[in-house]
Image 1 (tube, rainbow over the protein chains, first blue to last red):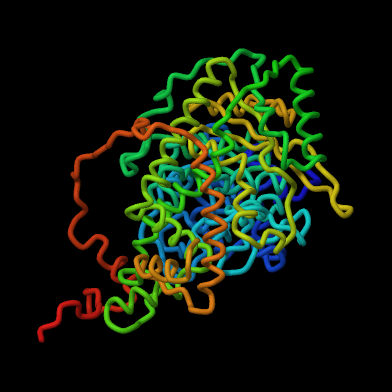
Image 2 (cartoon, rainbow over the protein chains, first blue to last red; image 1 turned 180 degrees about the horizontal axis):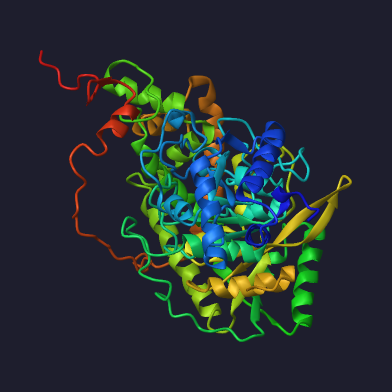
Length: 479
Length: 95
């Protein structure tokens, strides 16, 4: 094998491990040394973990004894976003207020990965408390896009995206509240999945917007995304929002040739021309392979981003109320107990969390809650109904993941222009539906070829539709 | 229009201080965001429009861990402690 081991996908690495072409140790060393070498430049990881010798040995033994029956993730080095708890490790959500916080327990996704024999390369950088679309909002400096280091990798899971795309990990975990897995996947040429709300446990995940947050994969292929998602999904009594089982939702089966809905009315303005051409080409390719493309109307979509920027800050301000410097994290002493709260929060939160806490406090305050929060909640229902209606006749809905390719640092300096990055992705979070971003071709910018992503949404519980159509785009054969 | 006083008041409610010199910028950004989300006013949705069909899911509070299982790990996280106790400032005055 001529390719460096750190560049392999999960499926390729798993095959090589079983064929004894290399050992778990070889794979770990390749990833770990690549990460040590390139992380100072990319700032993808906030911390690189030492080799866990016991875990490496156990994974190797398992592959040796169980062979193909061993979990696919066994011995695979994974990048973990800094808002996912790993017992004994710092989990800071890239915030100063949690810089000293060490997780006292494993999140459910961490436990599942450990049980599958996966290895953790380190904890990845992110926008503070997952608030952002460029990873410029980290309290520990921005993350660079490995494809063009003058550009952002997207966010908020920009650290995991940069780590996987730069081959500083075989695969990675992110969290998605408004697009935080899919948008960075699009900007770094990866596949990213935001699963059905409730399909993956959030126990042990630092919350941003509790009616929106989900954990999902950032991976090098659709097959890897599917493998990782299937490892993580499942009911968890520790998460009250966990759905009972994978067949909770009655999914209408899709035929071998799918019906793809495209809301063309959303693509009329604000879209980069080259990116639009990539989208048209991808849709044409799907049509030529026998899939049917129809125009769908989702009129409330144009209000999705305003709805999101009411609901998400409301939930964020509520969730972030718990960080007060009392029981864990950083305490900055002030005058009396109130002074301790004030100073800890003022020093601990960066500008974006502060902005969203204030916004959330405003939209929930007496006198404004009807005009903003309740209105947004009602619009959210309307949006969901439109999607449900559309899914009576189409199997998946497609549009570009982002309006333009990865932008340069500092390019989106006012909050609203940054928020507009999520204009296409937020609908899946608001409706709870699963969505996948898959690379759909590159556009040239200043002599650099930048990736773009096509975004598919499916009805709740229909991740399988996404994997199938995603594999059609990438030309993969799923096992 | 959000004034610097409005922002100061919200910050107070949220137990955060926005430095005086940053209040005007925050107020301006606030206006920009509110103008953007204000598009919602164009949308006519009935006031009693049903919310998403959520239901409460409870689990039995059973199988408690033996006393002390988590003590050491939790105490280690305390920013300030006195033995195994969390140390905070006095709230109720005896004067």
